[in-house]
Length: 256
Image (tube, rainbow, N blue to C red):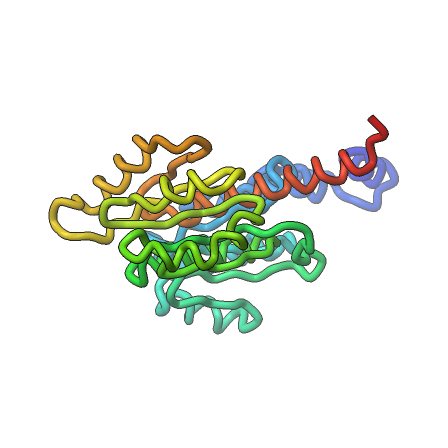
C-alpha cells in the first residue's frame, strides 16, 4: 500500500495532501481520534463505545469509519441514539436487547468452520449474553445460544452439554453467585470466557460476588472478563475461534 501511494505521488496522480490523508493512522474529530489503522493491526476496525457519548458524536465517528468502507460496531448504544444513526444509515442493524448497532461489509461473511457457544445462566442475564452473541456474529463467527441453563436447574445444562462440548470456545454468562462457568469448565475441553453480571440481590454487590467466584474457580481453562462485559468476552472468543481454524487448516495441510 505504501509503495502504491508513493508511486502515485511520483506520477502526479495523487497530491501530497491526498497522500498524507491516506497515510494518516487516525482522523482527529476534535472530541475523538478515530483509529483508521486498527483493522490493519488487529483484524477488526475500531469499535465504538456508545455509552457516555452524544448521538451527534457517535454519528460523526460512524461517518469517519464508514468513509473508509470499514464495518461498524457500536456497543452500549440506546434506542434513541441508534434511531438517530439509522436515519443516516438505514442499512445498519440495531438490536435493542444487546444495545448494539452494526453494519458488516459484504465481503465479511460468516465462517462455516466452528462455532462459539454462548451459555447463559438465567433470563435476567440475557442482555449481557446477547451483547456477546451479537458481537461475535457481527465479527463474522457462527454462534449457538444456550440460554436459561443455570445451576439452579442443572438438568437443563446437561440436555445441551454435548453440543456445547463441540464448540471451539464458550462464553459463559452468569450473575448471582456466578457458579455456572465452574460447572461448564469441568465438562468441556475448550477455553471458557466467563462473564459475571450485575444481576443478583444485595450481597451480590452488583456483580462483585459473581466476579470473585469466577476468579476463584477450581476448574481449569477459565478466563474472566469484567462485570457485564459481554463485548470483551466475545471479542476474545472470536480471536480464539480464528486461531483454532487457522491451526486446523495448517494441521490438515501438514504431512508430519
